[in-house]
Image 1 (cartoon, one colour):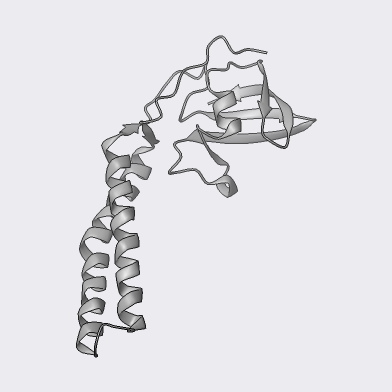
Image 2: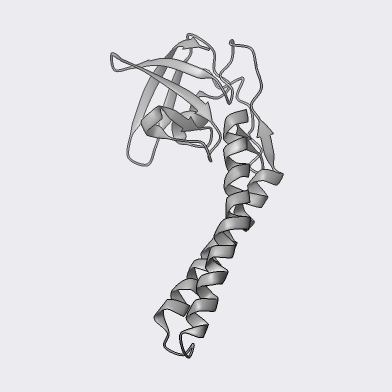
Length: 161
């Protein structure tokens, strides 16, 4: 099993494909412009509709505003620490690599992405997930052990693209 080439991941960095970064920026822009404006309108309408004590519509709008504010803060933090996934060598598994592996006779393929782009249904796994973290720094032919709280299994790396 190879662990010699493992690269330490900076937990402050958030990896993005160029497309993923654009999507995150679009989401932030939407939240700041359209969504907050929409919520402000709802709050104003609820105020005009009567007293704010025991006004469920007003409370719901304030709650949503708080949720959106927190999401904006989180997205801004993520974007401040954004790191674009660049072209790299196909000799070592890195963020951005597409990796073909074999485990228990079954062949699977993953793309290693940052946590914000992870989508297991599309076979995009986070570099911070147990599988993604275990594969990072490995080479073709390596046997990599992945341990989760419930399972432990081994992947043989067949191909890195």
